[in-house]
Image 1: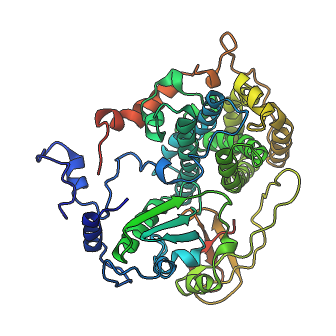
Image 2 (image 1 turned 45 degrees about the vertical axis):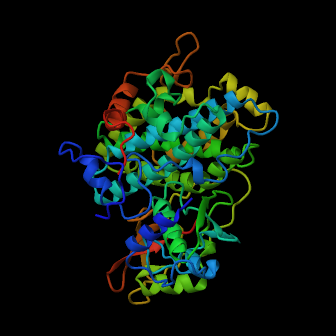
Image 3 (image 1 turned 60 degrees about the vertical axis):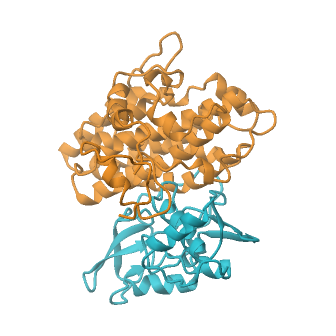
Length: 188
Length: 307
């Protein structure tokens, strides 16, 4: 629940906001949500990332449902705060941001636009997530021979050197042609 | 400084949280030790499924949550101490995934219990005997990387098999945690298995140390497959998975990895129980006390601190 006084405060503290709408003038909530960016990968909007599961407007109340990428994704709290602040600034009196875990997020939900923006920012976009096989989940003792294009030189001669990168959703790879290391958003 | 947090009355130079609380960039203050997920997460407050005993559900969520919380805390000891930066990052990432699972499960436990305890209270205000994690989770690695890998191989192989069977749990929160957790644990297990291969099938020294680490961890394996009374009742209600049923899958995975790594499956006596009680019943090794002393010290010194 956000009061009018808090709304004024929120407007004051959201500095680098892309949405410029006067308070009291309820802009299209879906459009406002679409412009909020991911705090860890600001080249992507939350929409590009595929974490927005629903936007529901009822009078001056808006309910946004989001899902985290990984269980422990620390960005989820910042996403929630940013959504609340941006919608409040856009004139919504009551903003409710809900988090759901099911169905689990998949990199397949990243938009085509998002994939292009990732590559432009030097992060190799994910391939398609592998479908679940029946029976016990098999071990993968060597990295699967994925074709991951180097975002710097375009070569497909790249190799994974760590499954775990600087954020929960990326792996580290290096390019054998241009020798540059780069991040790869790993498929889940 | 936006002057928003009027709850802070006077300046106190000894209170580090005071300055933090005045620089918050958003419209709500945060508790220093977490952010309180319960009020904003849709699934956590869903009703206890019909025919399920709320007390059993709370206990079961605590078991699964405590395993993840305590294991996660032990893994954090590797941050800035792993042999290479990449392994530092990997172990921290694994800890973060487990911490995320723990938060949701403990929040659900608090909700099912209905006594007003949230995830923070359950994590920071319980004593040793109130934790229900298995012994394996509380073991320290003593900065022995082979030990970290052996322990992670065992833990992730077991937890993955367990969560895979919880995908269809009648409890929506457990099913949701399993849905995300299976994807995460698959990565954790592959990571541990690949390192087991490198070390086991590496030099004489690395082989020797990997085998020694497995031998040290092995007494804690048996406990993972012992079912509790709560689990028996919840299996019947469609909520829990019987850990005993995961043994065959665990053995197959370990068999495959150990054979390829030229390691020998240890033959060690399991740690015993006292009058049938073990970690699941709150009976722990002295190591858990050390974990809690560190994990809870800040929260106990500054209860309710916000920033």
